[in-house]
Structures are given as C-alpha cells and as structure tokens.
Length: 456
Image (cartoon, rainbow, N blue to C red; front, side, top):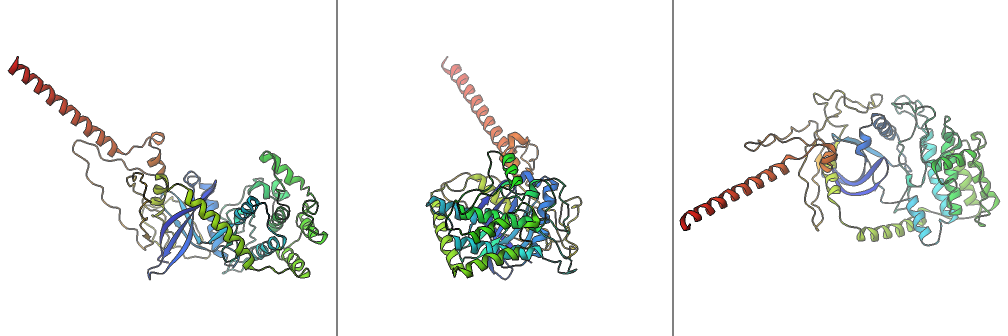
C-alpha cells in the first residue's frame, strides 16, 4: 500500500479504544483524511481482547458498502494495534440527539425514519455478506447497534461503524457461551439472557433506536447495569403514541414488530424492516433526503467547533500519545522481521497473502516536550515500508554513569513511580547539580581558611 500516516487530532475516546483523525499520504503524494482507531494500552496487553479487535479488522476488510465505514489498513506499533478507516466528517447519532435535546427538540419523524432505513441497508448487506473467494456466507451480526455507532456525514450520509463485536464463521476466536457483549441498553432479550443471537438481534436494536428517537426517551435504562439487563429481558414496550401523538397506529405497529420479545415474531430481515419504514414515508408522501440530514449535522458541527475553541490546548500526555501513534506502521506492507515469533498478529490467510506482514516494530522513548502555550509541533509522518528501518544506535553513557535504561512503553514514560522505570537523564542532572554544589562548598571553605590564615 505504501501509505504513511500523520496524526492531526484526537476525535473520540471510550472504554476500549480511542479514535484519532489523521492524513494518509501515498508515495505519489496523494493525501486523504483517515480515522485511526487505537486499542487503549491496558487492553492491548489482553490477548483475548486483541484477538477480538483483529476479528473486527478481518471482518471489516470484507465489507464494502456505501452505508458502512470502510477499513483501509491494519497497523501496529510495539505497544498497540490500530485500524485505519474512512474518516466520516460529521457526527454520530448520539451527538445529534444530545444537541437537539439541548434545544428542546428531537429528531423529526421523517428524518428518524430515513436514518433507520439507511442503517437497515447496511445491516442487510452485512448479514448476507460472503467470503469473496469461497462465496461462503459469513453470517455477520453487528451486535452493537447503538447511537455512537451510527455516523452521519456533513453530506447527509448514514454509515455504520465498529463491527468489533460481530460474530462470523471466520472468527479467529469464538465468543464464549453466556457472555453478554454490547451496550446493555441496546441488547436484545436473547443476548441479555446469554443465548445465541442472529441477525434478528440487530433488528431489535433498530427498533430500540426508533422508539427512542420517536419519544425522546430511553427505552431500557435502569439504575444499575443489572436492572437495565432485566428490563431488556422482559422487553415490555410502552406505547409510543402515548408519548408522541404524531406517531400513528401504523408506524407504532412497525416499531412494536421490530421489538417483539420472541425473535420469530420480529421482522426476519433488516431489508423487511427497511421496506416497511420506506413504505410508510411513501404512503404519507413524506419527502426526506440526505440534504435534510446534512442540515442537522451542520448545526452539530458548529456547536462542536465552538466547544473545541474553548477547550484547553493539548496536554503533554496528548503530545506523547501522538508521538507513539506517529510510529504507526502497516501490517500489510512489511516483511516479517527476525525475532518476531510469538507476537500477536492477524491471520487472514484465507483471503490475503500474508507473506509480507510485519509484527515487530520498535518504540524508542523520546524526551517529553515541556508544556508551552503554543500548540505542539506537527507530528512527523512515518512511511510504511517493505523493510523495517534499523534502530538508531544509542549514545554512549556519560563517564562514570551506567548506560541509560530503555523506557519500553508510553505508560512507563508517564508513570515512572508506578512502573519502577525512570529516565536516568533526570538522575544525571541531579548528580551533576550535587557535584557542582559540593565543589562550590569546598572552594568556599578553602577561601575562608585562607583568609583566616592571612588576617588571623
């Protein structure tokens, strides 16, 4: 692929990963914006979570649809893993709903229906996706349909993201039986009970989103996670029309069918739910286009820009994270270096030639820049190459001092007292100051004794 990536800003962060905006530049100088999703350092040490993250990468490489965020590359530093994805310039459905709630409004019925029709198109494609080489069905289930995972571009496009909890036959590591995955408020009853799920679980999640957008309230939300899961298991659905008189019986019937407790009573295909919603718009002569969604997104972006202008500049921690992420290198382009055995890596041998994959990349610590009022200097881009560049030779130790310890991770750089790893450059400075103080003291004492002998 031959791309290099330059990180420009942090976009979002959550409990499992954080997303950065960056620029991909090809060898020919072509540039485009990308989103880089990074596993948080504490989870990067969890082999099971890394395997799940790489499952997302493997599945995402199969998916190419207008309503699904495309994945371009899988990348890695010594300390973490990354997905390089299409950057959607806009906001997610949660940000839109929060902004409208701020203004005492909610998403209008036709616009809410339009967004869910587009989401159903994405799900229908994913549910029926096949391996491009074997034509075997992948049986993908998203399992995490929720407002943050529905992106809206400033052009009014609707795109699903984050198939990290998807399950397919090609999965590297199967989901443990009985393990509940996904955001609790958007689970299906069968998922909340630890039973096997299929594409109808995604249809139930779409029903939850419809109910919430129509009413402006949360459907399943308890005081604790346990209470929330219990509410999902019971699947008692309050009347939509009682909370929003604009919802007529025909539209409420569509919502209730998608939220049936028994999967057999729901729509069996995402396309069926999408058709029912489209039919409602057409029968009521309700015109909605991407232009209507774009106007909503524009308002959210203006508000987000205002908040960013009031936010403090990047902290030193953000700068150090960007320095690490500047070392992002494609796993798809490099040769396997010697001594990389035992590294966790993706094995998509069924559809990608893996002979040139690289899994071992060095991360040499750089001195932390001092905080300054001016913004941090631009992060240098790193080019994906077919050969790993040699590590620079460390400078010789100072006379009388032991060699420098290598700071092996960003965590050790930021928390030396907790990790027990200290940068000896600080120690050298302290020792030098102490020696200087000692010499000054000796000289002063000598001068005092000399004066006493002359004048005493």
